[in-house]
Length: 307
Image (cartoon, rainbow, N blue to C red):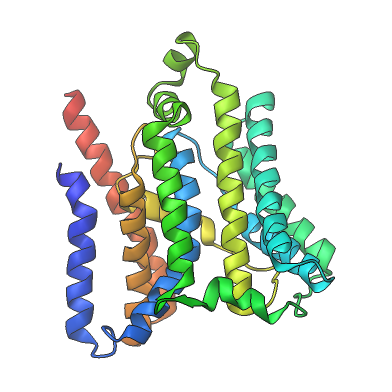
């Protein structure tokens, strides 16, 4: 119970502290900026939630962000309609995730090694197809994805909510969700129970890839360019959001709500650091330290439960 409440308590404390420390924090413009800035990390983290619950890891999501955003913007720059370009970017991410899943299940290599290698492969491919240059000739309407508003609220918030509802539904109300928890809790028992582990492993990596492609498109929309160097270090942000939100790197635990809370904690940390003039390098150190702290708390809790 304490572990579940800890992220919410941390978010509340951080919100109160920043409200007191900076008069600019509670302005509608700043809060809207926080939502837009954290949307990419939160959508990435939703996909990572599925993978971490299954006791896996995906270090290639940052590279998929770059490749998905690049594929969509390159298509739009050549005259493809915006909706088709967006679908192409998502499909690119989906295919990358599918390849990750197939390599893991068919070659029986641990996810850490496969996705570490794919991180370099996909990043290199993004640089090759773009000659290392950003794509600038994107239609102005594409900016609405990352910068538009609906009834005064950022459009990207609506996109995030839809993604969160879908992932929550998958986890709580589908066979795939039940099997994800079973695989993460005890993969050998899942195999003996007749669960098609390989199929569902590929499925969750493909879903994570599709969400990463969408995140890449949102990033490209906010920048109005497709950047082959986008998404560097985003895998750390996504993993941190899941872990801070109560997910266990041992698998079998994690929630969508917890992940979103973890993502917004990191978003508030980054925003508060900017408002208070804190060195951005300190932000990176804080994120790393928070991962260690929350994983340590999880390990201590598990040791007590086994004792």
